[in-house]
Image (cartoon, rainbow, N blue to C red; front, top):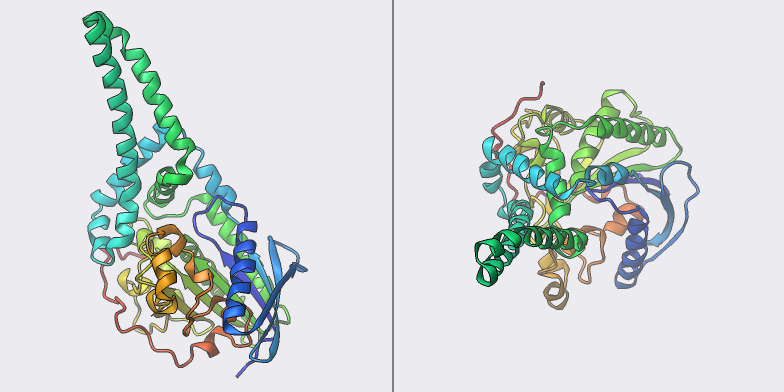
Length: 402
């Protein structure tokens, strides 16, 4: 069994406009907490590798010293550009996105998998419509107030201030979206729905850069190259790794290649009619022996398609399918009752729990995976998939050719 002394880790975040330093601080804080709970040592240093934003991790786990260079493959600038819409443009997105998922039948098929992420997808629609309804009500009250005072003339005069107050209310909601997440989530789902599941050109170009960075790491003197894709980043990682392998850039004598998908929402894209590229990449990657692919979700994460095999449910599982190994992080058991009670209704925080400390850890530990002495393949060589995984074909669209 290969013992890891040096590892390169590439983290692909989901649809997130925030600077990647957020992920460094999350790793630093939660890694220290997990190390204290589990009895190992872990510490962060400034990065020494060229390329994307990152940091270096030095650990002593199970008596072994390990050095890991972690880098974030950034596409937050693309996310920010996609979120720079006006209020009317966002409501136009709402209509187009809702029609895309409802009109294609994707929404009803997604509901057969997990209702949690579908509710999360419907939330911004409901919240934005509620905000619009309040703005209209405010305008209506101004008109009614004018009518009561001055009659018909007052009603007419009340229209303009009513519209102005309604617009101010909508702007207030947008300014404080950090509380409501309505605009953020609407932009997230609209980004995939806009092209029916196909990747926009700027994203394809960035993914090609990611492939080059990972391929370069695979040529270095390290023991493992580990790619971590979280949320929407999981389906980006699928396509990036499929490209790297197709291009013959994985050497049989090089580092072990691992792929860890966390809290994935792959069906939100793969179920769309023009997601030919993603479906082809899912089918291709699932049969490759050049890598180990482990997919970790949890039913407690209402934003992920928990225990849904992204290849099988997309209807593209080949006869020689090997991956992914699907199992649960089991939040309700890996977290104490007190901690679970504290986090239970913090939906967006739970969506990031995979990269956080567990106070009753079981067989999933993000920090041992990324900074421990075992490769992903060795760590889960004897792990069985969750018995409750969903691995039946559900998607209406299964074409892998445009």
